Amino acid sequence: MAYPATRMRRLRRKGVLRELVRETELSPGHLIQPLFVVHGEGVREPIQGMPDVERFSISELVAEVTEVQAAGIRAVLLFGVPAAKDELGSGAYDKQGIVQMALQAVKEAHPELVVITDLCLCAYTSHGHCGFVRDGEVDNDITLELLAKTAISHADAGADAVAPSDMMDGRVGAIRSQLDEEGHPNLPIVAYSAKYASAFYGPFRAVAESTPEFGDRCGYQMDPANAAEAVREARLDIEEGADVVMVKPATPYLDVIRRVKDETGAPVAAYHVSGEYSMLKAAAQNGWLDEKQAALETLTSIRRAGADMIVTYYAKQAAAWLD
Ligand code: PBG
Image (cartoon, rainbow, N blue to C red):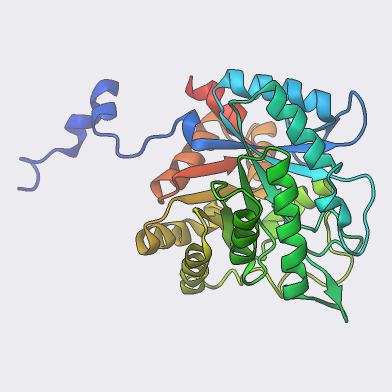
């Protein structure tokens, strides 16, 4: 029966009552902290456009992980910035590469931490594209071999999961079969399944030094106008062996997160990307938004949309706020 028999405000009057009927939970266990590792000693570089995010050299990274874990975050997504780049992106699958060395150091110091590695060539290729370029175009099938090789090198160095972010067709299958063949049948794949060609990656590309030298990524990343296609992408990745499917960015694509969750039933990750983070930070620094409230509301909305886990530059800060 409607008003006055029903008064929705009755359960909003006290914090405890509100908590009893809360539908969505946000806790540090749902958050994954992205981390950037660079060559050098004692390096902690602030990043233009991303306040409170830094690039760390290996020993600094190990120290940062101690803090991230103390805040309550148990999983990180690792990105490497190599010293040199070439056409084949060979730094990506170098056994002595930056990610491989960082993995060994981090896992030795923090064996219980879950380290997921971003699997892509864009930070390692001289042209900044996510694959091998032939005749001005990213060649899908040659790129698959390089990605599979990279996955093995991460697995051998101690990764707990690999996260391919290149958007080549068939890469999950190629990586899965190579991992299985080379003794890593239990290593999960977190596939960036619906990764959009987004303006919100701007700050990240400055950090990872991965801006394409020519053209853009529209030939492989998804058109922001499409949602049914995201479901197809996720289904294909699951068929090829993906354990988690990801939607990226998060807040402009909350409808896509919901559809992928409902239509696949698979574990879903959402990536709250650099530009989404920068917008909140900029507004907060200008005194235009209450940062804690706005950030937690944003992360809650991503969970409410259906994401099981959220990759966010706010992970460590949010964990402290949630404590
Ligand atoms: C690499 C990659 C990108 C991001 C994650 N992995 C950028 C891109 O595709 O250009 C974006 C992350 C962010 O903006 O926070 N392929």
